Image (cartoon, rainbow over all chains, first blue to last red; front, side, top):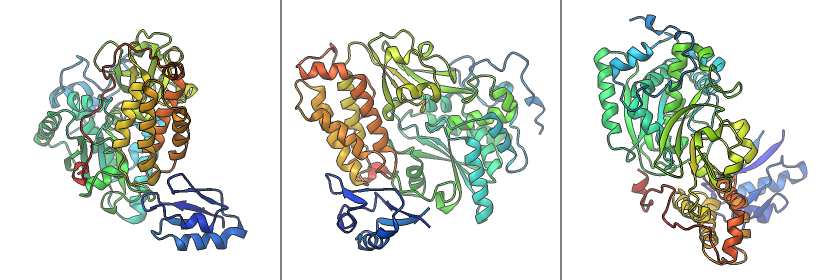
Length: 66
Length: 437
C-alpha cells in the first residue's frame, strides 16, 4: 500500500536531518524547515524514507498509509 | 408542550428577509417575542432526524468554511455510535475576525434562535452537554444578555440539555476549531495538528460538534419551516440567507441579512470603478471594485476573483486610502497573532509583514515585491491551521489588486491623501501564554 510522508508542523523544529537522508523527497526552506513531496513514496525510496522518519529528533516526520 | 404553532408561514412570506434578525431592526427579542415570531422549539424526539432536513435544505456553515451542516452532524453521530461516547455540541461565537460583527449582533438581538439551534443540534447528535463560546471583549454586555436569555429559558423549562457559557480570549485564532477545543479543555486557545478531526475526538476526547452561532440560528429556522422554505431564497447550489458585516467607504459597519447570490453592487452601494473591496475579511481577498460589482455573493461567482463568501465581511476601501498601507498594517497584526508554533508561519509572516511595510512606503527596495510573493508561496499549506494560508491569500490578492499603487510607490508616489487607519485592528498583541488563556 502506498505511503506518504507528512510532517507535524508544530512538532517540527527544523533540525533538517530528514532532508539530508532523503533529498529526493525533502528539501529545506530558507529557514530550515522541510518542504515535503506529498506524492506516494516510490518503492525504491522506502528504506530511506523510513530512515528519515527514525532520524527525526522530535518525531515530527511520519509515513502515513493512504 | 406542542409544536402546533410552528406551521409553514403564510404563502409569500418565505422570501422575506430578515429571517434571523428582528424585523424591527434593533430591538432585542426576549423569549416571548421570540416564540410569538418563530413559534416553539420543534424537538424531533430522536437523534438523527433533523439531519435529513439539513441535507435537503443544503445548509452550510456560516462561520467561513461553508461546510455542509448535515455532514458534520452525521460525522458526530456516527463517531458517537461507533465509539459509544456521548458527544458535546459547541456554538462558536468567538468571531475573532476584527472586521466582523455579525455574530455578536445576532447574539445580542436574537439569542434565543441560537440557543434553540444549540438544543436541536444536541438532540440531533445525542449530545448531553452544550457550550456557547463567545468573544470576551467584543461587546461587554453580550454575556449579560445571554445569561438573561438563559434565565428566561430556564423559567419555562424549554432546554433539554444544560448550556454552559464560555469566553474566548481576544486573539485572532481563538475561534479556530482546534484552538477552541484546546481552550475549553483548560489550555491556551492555540491550534493543534489534525487529525483526528474534532467530530471524532474533540473536547475531552468526545465526538464534538462545533458550529458557528449563525449556522445554529439558521438550523433552528430550517427545523421549524423545512428545507423548501429555506431554499426560497439564495441560489440553487448555495441556498438560504446569510448575515454580512458591511463596511462602506463612508461610514461605520452595518449588519445585514441578505440572500446568497445577491449582486455585490446592491450590498456595497456605489463604488468607484478603480477602487477596491475586501471580500471575506483578513483571510480574504482584495478585488478591484469594478470587477467585484459584476459579481454576486456566492462562492461560485466570487471564485472569478479568487474570493470566497467566508463569514460575510465586505469592505469598501475609501478612495483616499492606500490599499498597500492598509494591507501592511493588517498583515503586521496577523503576523503578531500567529501562535508561533509552526516554523514557516513563525518565520514567514513577520518577514512578509516587514516587506509589505517597505512596499507601502516610498521607494521600497528592489527585492521586496518578489520576496513577498516567494514567502507567500512558501508559507501556504505548511501550518497546523490555515492562518498562514489565509494570510498569504490576503497578501497575494493585495499585490494584484494594488499593482498600480505598487508601481506608484516604486516611483516615490502614493495616490492616497489620508493616512488615518481604516481597517479595524484590535490593540495589543499576545506577549505571554496568559494572553491566549
